[in-house]
Picture (cartoon, rainbow, N blue to C red):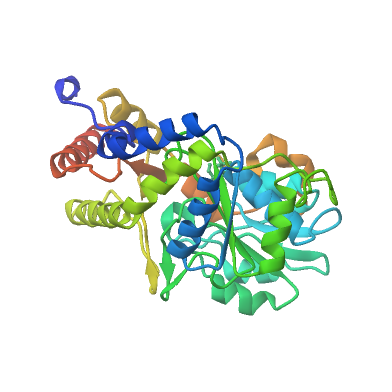
Length: 376
Ligand SMILES: Cc1ncc(COP(=O)(O)O)c(C=O)c1O
């Protein structure tokens, strides 16, 4: 396989390519913030919040410092804390469960379904106790979880807070993130579909009182300067991040379209490849393909060989949440999640980003086939 090392590499994501497309808009906007010096709570923050709320189809958007804070503050604004249980899928990025612990509540893990890898609605229903106050469905890899089914199954006493870190612009039966729940928390980590030039996040909702509570918590528990009604946090969205995000937001719909087109091309290129299980999209979902995740046997060997020959494949996520040492003391009950375990062993994220070209995708698939021919 050494001959393949001579071919150009394909990164998992290419943020420099994205920046080149928008540098002429982003750079003057950042320089203007430097000149105005309104670094914290500048007017560009409110302008971005309004634009992102409109894009997402919610009435409110409160910018915060990162996606983990967005989840934690959403839980706290919903009054969830010590003694409360929050149901979380076992296959997610660590921050989903971490936010529950940071809010003072107890995460209760449930498995994901075997086809779409989204929180299993029946498992969530079965995990419900008298202390269950919330469910955090994760819109994994860019497709929305079954929010409306969860809402019906859990009833009005359990709030739903969507972890929409990977799903900006996604839709389900025509509804966007935050449309059918108390709130959607999102992350603008640089590699996300809408990414900042550093850390940033937001909470979307249609509830004015809840939105005010987030604005208070993100700013030291204060709405009126020097009047602090809660112990909050310093978790504001920087003005510089707001102008970067506002510029990129104008491209997000097109970028999501390009991601879907790239995913469709991978589907075609891999259609006859029995050794590779392709991702499935649930009926009614408009997927935004934050990640294109296939499943293969001998995943670690395949990954190592792809990386060795310059294909920037990755794994999301190699360790399910119930195996994370930090969560051990916070978890209870039988921690048996076969679908999350299988995914952790077999998931392989292929390079996918707006602007990836056909030749790059063909090279990824050709290399993957070649690697699979020589493994095991
Ligand atoms: C599913 C999920 N939840 C939460 C987060 C946390 O977001 P952040 O890194 O902005 O804190 C991320 C991304 O990193 C994520 O992918």
